[in-house]
Every structure is written in structure tokens, then in C-alpha cells.
Image (cartoon, rainbow, N blue to C red; front, side):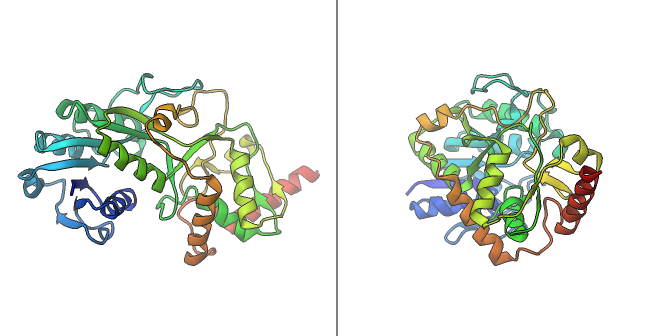
Length: 334
């Protein structure tokens, strides 16, 4: 029975890794504070605060077939990699395609990376991209044969960001009423179902795969993605499509978070950090992508169970959306 240590394991991605590994018959241990949720049934939880000295003592005296690291705080990643050096047959770091320098050309695994964050720099979300590069470097310093999973936009049931879930939920809310959708041009997006990402990752660990891999989905134009969401949700109302400049001038944010149109990145001629990443190595190493419509259906089922009208963590409230639609319709009529 392979032994797996997940550094994390109580939040979304880490818990999915643990759950799927247990289903494969692996012996799974999760090191975490336990503040983000509970471990998957069958996993052992080692409670530890990674801000404190000696936090790896309870796992550093054991031999592991595999370790998976999901943090993006450089000090956490460096200290764990050093503390467990020589204790793991295989090491996986879950990075991000955000580690690459922005581009408009197709990005393979040998493309230039961003400048890394400083050693042990305490980072927030604004330094996420640079932090991922630093974490990769520190991982490789201790584990030269590590697998670097440069993931695209991870989606699926349980996603705490709600970036993807906003659209099927809003389409279901709108029904036959109007719905606000940004106009092209926008950069494409590449989403990957968390279940597919983890299934491939565990297969890659079993195969001893090393080096960087872009774990990404197909490239999708934003409007194409939204139309699929509307189809699944049964939305037949009018799509109201203001230009990017109009939306930005009214404080509508791109990409994520409250007050945004999630996954929308206006294309104003500049390189982008999303949407241009080759998935060839992912597919060549056994990666499988389920039909996107299946992910949409599963996410919408979850959204309905949670309540379509609950306050969202991402996107516009329905009330704010209708205000913007009324204003745009009024300006277009003049």
C-alpha cells in the first residue's frame, strides 16, 4: 500500500487528492492545521501550524512513497522540502501556469518564467505568480526529480473561489430574463476539472513522472463557455453585452472576486497570463479531460443544492447586474 503525505489536505484540492488516493488503496496522511475543513474519510490528520518551528517533526521521521505539496507560501514550501529531503521517493509540487511570463503565443513547459519572489517572502494574492516560481525553485533545490504540476484554472464541485460556478448559477437565476455578458474581445480560458487533474496526478506519481507539466483544459472563448452554461441551465433570456470599457468604467472587475465578471479578462492587445498554454505533455502522459458539459452539470447541481439566491463569493449580485443592464439599455436607446 503506497504511503502518501499531503501537505495540506483539508481544503478543496488537497482533500480531493486525499480522497482519490484512499479510493486507490493508498495510505494517506494529511499535515494541516485542520482549520479549512476535515480530512477525507480514511486519512490520518497530523495537526501542525506551518508558521511554527518543528511543525514537520511528526512526519519527518517516516519514509513516504510520495509527498504532494499545495502551498504557495515560499517559506512553507522551502522548509517542508528541506525537512523531508531524503524521506520521499517521489515529490509533487502543485504550481500554476501563472508561473510563466505572460504571452499571446502557445506556451510549452520550456517557456520563460516570471521573476521569482524573494526567498521566504511573505506573499499575498498580488504576488501569487512570483510566489509559485519561487516555490518551484525551492522544491527542485531539495528534490531535483520533482513533478511540477502547472495547473490551469481548476474548476468543479466544491471550488471555494466560485469563479466557474457563478455562470451556471447566474444563468439559472436569469432564466428567461436578461443576463449580463461581456463583449469580445477577451482572452480565452482553459479550465480543468479538479477530479480529472487529481486522477492524472496520482497516475503520474505512480509512474514516477518528473519535471513540469501544463495540466490545462482546452482553450475556450468566453462567450462559448457562457453559452454552454446557459444551455445547461435552460436560460433563454436576452444576453446584454456591454463593451469592456463600459463595464470597467462602472467598477466591474475582471477575473474573480466580488463585483466581478469571473473568468473574464478583456483583450486589449497585451500578453496574458491565461488561455495560451499547451496541454500536449499532459495528454501524452495520460491526462484525460471529461466533457466540459459534465462539469457544468455537476457544478449546477451543487449550486442548486446550496441555494441559487445565496450571496456569492464571486461575481455581481443579481440586483447589481440588473442595475447595469437597465443603465446600458437606457444608454443604447438614446
